[in-house]
Amino acid sequence: MKRILAAVLAAVMLVSAAVVNACAAENGDTGQCGSYEYKVTSSDKEITITNYTGSDKNLMIPSRLDGYKVTGIGSFAFAENTKMETVNIPNTVKAIERLTFWCCTSLKEVYIPDSVTGIRQAFVQCTSLQNFHVSSGNTYYCDIDGVLCSKDKMAIYAFPSGRGGKYLVPECITRFSAECFTDCVNLEGVVVTGEITSCDTMAMFNSDKDMTDGFGGICNKDIVVYDHSGSYLHKAARTREIFMNFCPYEIGDVNGDGKVTAVDSLLVQRAALKLVKLTEEQEYRADVNLERTLDNVDAMIILRDCVGVGSKDDKPNLAAKVCKEFGIVKDPL
Image (tube, rainbow, N blue to C red; front, side, top):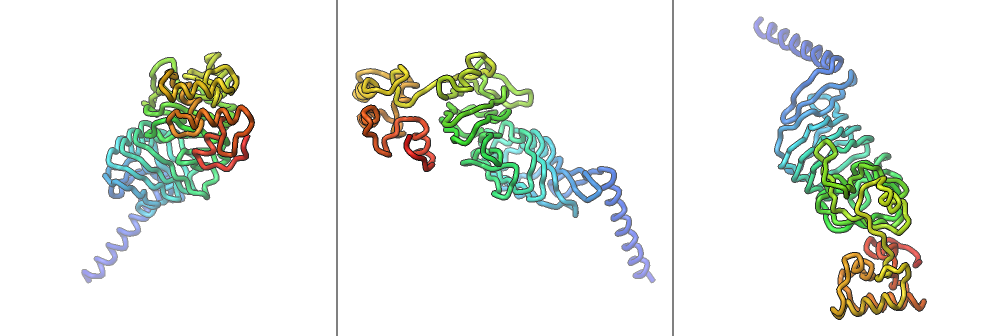
């Protein structure tokens, strides 16, 4: 008899639990499963993760919690987690909200699946971030050398803020989106190789003052934007439509007279012999073979180009330099 009563009681408890879960799905209730807290977002048993208290170094976010499908990650859900170095988003998540990974200062690698259709400045102050890895089946996003871009490869959405040095923008990029260079405190320069036709005023090239974007994102006033004279960015900088440190260039035109001539070649030779000292901008224009040193090879490439005998390897223009550095196949200009 006791066994029968116990079985009946267990069945009643299971039914009650099912009723509670159904109500939670309808009422937007909250729950907890291990290190995850969540909120039910629909009657179809879908949830959004709202908080994580774990300390995994390489985190694989589950696609289901307590039988619910994880379709969203809420604002601040993983904020200030300093243990996590890599994170894999499950192929059920549709949206990653603003500031989801705020101040995850050890985070280096982010893996984004096919299912994600919305990312809203989720990685603010992730100051160690090196790469975004986007699944090839995603129809909204892609990555170009670890930089988060639009699927059509025309817009940059987020540059990994842990990187430094100069960033050579691929020729296919035409737009810098809002906050795409947030927190890039070690980034020295952004070198445009194609044609930028649109740049959000909050892309974070602020040369007026150090500031934040209101959510803790830092504008780096020391980033230098390199682009051709007369370009869209050049005009925007001159009219103060967009605050930035802008530097017009023409690779090979070391003396800045608007032409690449034998005079530039001679100037490089003198610099290689330590007879003259070039400015940083002049050194960038003069280093036509990308070896990051100035020598007679650079001078010879410039001279050969001037007299029209430059080979396929002698390309003293920026587009060709970028092709060489990124391994892009391009006809000589």
